[in-house]
Length: 495
Ligand SMILES: C[S@@+](CC[C@H](N)C(=O)[O-])C[C@H]1O[C@@H](n2cnc3c(N)ncnc32)[C@H](O)[C@@H]1O
Image (cartoon, rainbow, N blue to C red):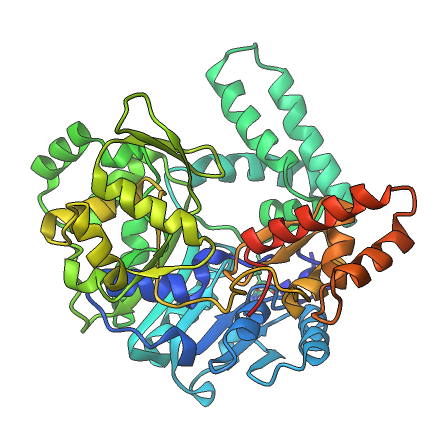
């Protein structure tokens, strides 16, 4: 079997930007928990196992006064990333090929350390070195992001992986390994009657695999190493390296089984108020498969009561759309994913309408306060709890930084150079808020490529007509305006 270096060199791993790893989100979580993290616009960030830098390069682009370092064992993806950095002319990021086992203090201290998709896929000594490095290199107020697969949900992935590995033991070719491995699972699935619980478990795993690219399945399901862990063991591992559990990168999803009042009450009476044990118990209830955990130094004082004074340091966004509710004073707020909320709370209505009007821009909680007060929404303990409920319900997102967004659609619109570079390579791009925006429509993708800030509407029409000659002038004009609107809303147009 190939070693780790050559497997990521010979079969490229489809990599993305992960919004939940952005220092903006890490800092916001840290501030909510009472910490004073480094300002997002002037910080040092390290990514371990960064592959080709798909996550780190867009961060470096939108944060020119922060410094970024990434490394990976596989040198071919690193070279691809270095080429992208060169093309973009970024001076605040360095990617290099290296083994975590041989890297340390020479890199200096970091305010944010990221390791996405790494911990569960490397052997125990490398896993240990990762947390040791976080312990050594994190600044006193630093935050580390570590994602990993968890038990008990990991049992199912381990089970299907074991079967697949049995079936492909003698196959070297990457494509064949994936095809045969999937085929074996489908064969086992078909042996079970419809509605059978074992079949249902398999169906879930097989469906998940179908949605992923063969390259991802090759690395994630058929890797030499795969070791999901219990949360409590991960937290203990972190403690040994002078780190403590801060929070997850994301708030628990709405309707989280671990947050149900009856379960919470029973759990608290069974195990008391130990936060780590509680988190573990919640994972049992959730059958959790994956965590994105934030760690900070053991000496930090972590607050878990989300005080208003911490929130005043933050900004908020909301991508909601409002519409009339069922009663005269009520409003319905709908998020792009379909999450809906109906409310007649005047303060909440005022807040969400203000944020809807400025999206994709953020507003500071302090600057919102006087407007909210007029609608009877005071940011006392109760008001802070209400804001947390809105965040839990995914109606608002907290931030610690203002993304460098355009104020509107200008005469010569400019999409970020990073999104244009990505659009030239693939049908999705990273927004200035570090989310991934789909560019599935070829016309939209062509338009984005033209937005370098030099073309006005006429020049855009001419360039697009050369490519889409079958579209009538008026249609093309409308499509361009529609596309520009989509790019503005998606935070792709820059200041
Ligand atoms: C599953 S990929 C994840 C890539 C990326 N972080 C992501 O989430 O898309 C794991 C990466 O870790 C790298 N890696 C594995 N062992 C390593 C080590 N000892 N030192 C540095 N990188 C390593 C691999 O080469 C691979 O690129």
